[in-house]
Structures are given as structure tokens and as C-alpha cells.
Length: 406
Image 1 (cartoon, one colour):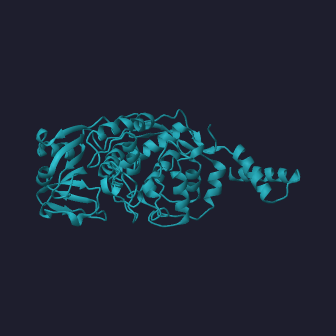
Image 2 (tube, rainbow, N blue to C red):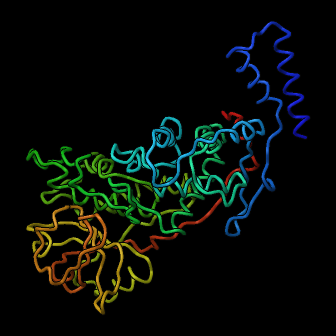
Image 3 (cartoon, rainbow, N blue to C red):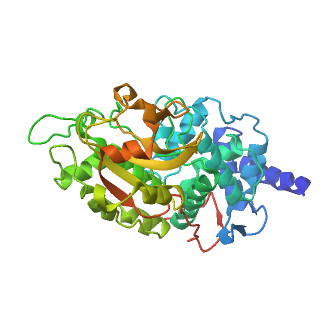
């Protein structure tokens, strides 16, 4: 078979030379074009595969691409930095190329990490290999992987969407969802700070006071954290600011609780168009309307999330929003995992009821239920499992990756 393949390649080359094309770059391009049209596709396995009982259609690699890429030994592996990583990340992150899919997120292409082969990119490549029938292949930026990543736009919208859904599903199953920190490590939750220099100086004023997101943006940052978690798509405080300004939601302390009801409805298109699920509107509970025991059960056992509205006390000198992301017991004491959008832990009081969170994120802190209830004004509760994410398939057939779709 290999001899026959090289024989007809040689014949094609002789034909090209016979019509007067010299052995130059032009002849090579012409040969590649003919090979792309004539070479049969290379299908690893059947045209479909089963992923947790969901039948999904495969991506077919052209045989001539596979043969050519096999001879290219250059590769980059997870944990390494290389210009090839930046090239692939920027391509996959481009909204012009992929207007409906998020394969590489905003936090993966910030200048500090854009050339770093992070664990999210590794998991995405593992997902892509699954679609190509290359299960078991270790994630790497070799020639065939670069070809697949750079040509995803040639697949149909439906199959590209299937790849994104399977990737986001794998993120939940492997506990790798979340943002990427500026040192390249993963948060394992979606965290955004109002003090982040990427948007901290954006104007977010009330009655002409000149305030910025740094000053009053705790609500936008909390909304970004919660809605990114449920949608599995990074929605930054900058986008939440736009919604707040367009709806004229600002009040003296930042945003009212009702802002979170409105934005839940606004972002439903992310589910209805991408995944087929809907995030329900949250419910607002005043301090007298809930108990911490109930809240512990909802967040620890049912997977709910909450935004807590606190008054001046252990965390702040004024009203403030924070996210309750999880609950855990450490050395016999229960703690909520608090995602505080204002990164300044040195301002905290009553630290005997707090505990540091391992890692490099100063916006996270463990706090006791008693401390949080003492300072609580109200709770915005999202009564859905934050880790619920369903597989689905929209494509109606396997597709060869080098064939363009309208």
C-alpha cells in the first residue's frame, strides 16, 4: 500500500513537470493541492464514538496530512513556553474565526501566559484527539495537532459546537474548569477581581462621582464569577459593566440585588444557542429569611452558588458583594470558600474566623458561617448545581477537516 501511494504521488509530480511546471515552490503547491483533492481521508475507528453514552460524530484527517505531519518531529508539551503555543492560542481565541465557540479563553491569552502550554489547552487537545479517534495520545503541539487546531474553522458550525460542548463537559468531569492565573496555574473556579488592572480603571460612576470598577465594581465581578461558572464561558467584569450601564442599574453602593435577576435573563442565549440548557433566575433572601445550616446544605451538597451582600464588618468598611463558591470542613471547623472580588486581604478583621486558601490567589479566603451571617444583609441564591453540564451532539455526520463549510 505504501509503495502504491508513493507511486501515484510520483506520477502526479511527473505530470506536473510534463506540463512545464518547474520543480519550484509553485510545483510543490500544485502537488499539495492535487493531493488534498485526491488523497482519501484517514478515519481512526468508526464514524462515531460514544462519550458517556452520547453518540458523537468524528473528525476525519486527510491521509496526505497525516503522512506529511508524521515526518515533522517538532513538538511542544504541557508546562512549556513556546511561540507555537501563542500562535495556536491566539488563533483559537479569535472571535472572528470562532464567533460561537470558546476553545481558548480570555485569561489564557493574557500577555503573561499566552505562550504557556496550560492545563486547559492540554485538556482541549485531549478532547480534539477524542474526536479524531486518537484517544490515548498525549497532549502536545506536534505537526498534526497544529494542523487540526488551525483548521477547525473548516468544520461545520454543528461539529465545532460538539467539540466545545465535549470540552466543557470534560472540564467539569476533570475539575479543570475556571480561569488561568497570571502565573499559568489554574484556579479550578472562575475568579475575577474588580481590582484586576485589565479593567479596574473602567469608569463606573454614580451621579458623576468619577468612580471606577475598582471603587464600585464588586457586583459586576461577582456576576462575572457566577455566570461564568454556570455557562462555562468566561464573561469578564468588563462585559457585566456594559450590562449595568445599559440598564442604568447603578446605585450609591454599586448595584442593587435585582441586577442579578436581570442579567440571568440576559445571558440565557449562551445556553439556548450553545448547549440547550437554561440558567434559572436566582432568588433573593433577606437575612431573616434563611439559615446558615440550610445554606451550607445547598452549597455543599446541592451544588448551588450564592452571592452574599455584606455590610461593614470583617470584610469591608462599606456594603460589598462576595461569592460563596463552596463549603468545606477543615480540622473539624466548617468554612465557606469566599471569592472576594476586592483583592486586599490585609484589610480583613476578625481573622480568627478566617483561614487562608492554598495557592496564589489573594481573592480567596475561607470564612466561618457564623462570621458571614453576622455581616450578611441578604443572599442572592442560584438554585442550580454549578457542576451540572450535559453532553449533546448536533452534527449529523463525520466530517473531513480540510473541507470548508459555508
